[in-house]
Length: 177
Image (tube, rainbow, N blue to C red; front, top):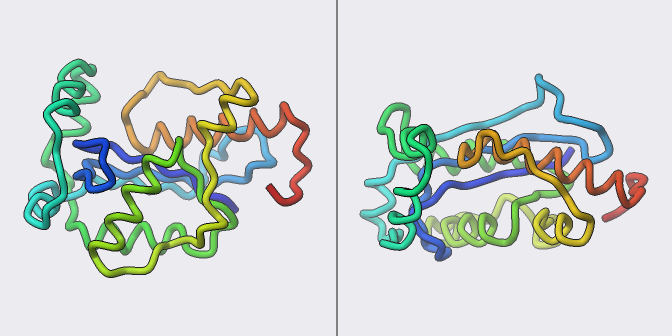
């Protein structure tokens, strides 16, 4: 089983404060994500990350100001935020023993690896398990459903479905990627 994850952040640097993390387990050989697929969706303590030196950029805050009110409320609301270490532990358990770990470009992986290093934790994956859906989509004309854009778990689901469609287009038969 593979995992697709997505982050919403306050910067574009690897040191970015993470607002939310969403992930879904999926079989890249299938068509569509099972409604009962394992998912996680976490809103992470911002203050805790700021205190440890994680970063926020004015440009990213300005970008967030141009997003829908729904996206802003989901990203910046205080309700349901969990401590950073708890979020990392949940994510680690979720990803553990996955075949591959996907994200949209290297952005999310770089941020998580920077965070793991800052917390002196081993990564939840091996370097050879990381996959980049953005590159796959560029080569195979992948399509994404952006109806719930900037909701981390919905973005992860959309990106996982995009991976499935792209792999079908190239006739991938489930052998090693």
